[in-house]
Length: 93
Image (cartoon, rainbow, N blue to C red; front, side):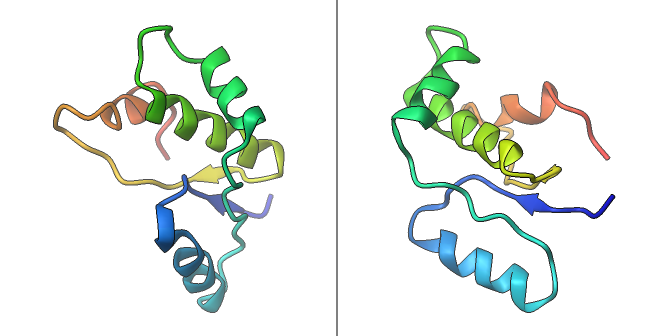
């Protein structure tokens, strides 16, 4: 199976990251724009009391998986930010 990556939206840097990956020959699916579907997916699969940015990020990651990505890359945080929660609940390769 061919590895196809994606990542969460990183604001104005999203397009730069997509083009950079493509320039070096990586098969990449651009993260989708944030829509109502993104929010609904993130809300459905998140704890109720978790922050809105977490829900948007999770929803966007689910959408990229639905579009064919089979690898997700993202920054991680060891601090207070809930970014640290993604890696602890997934499979590492």
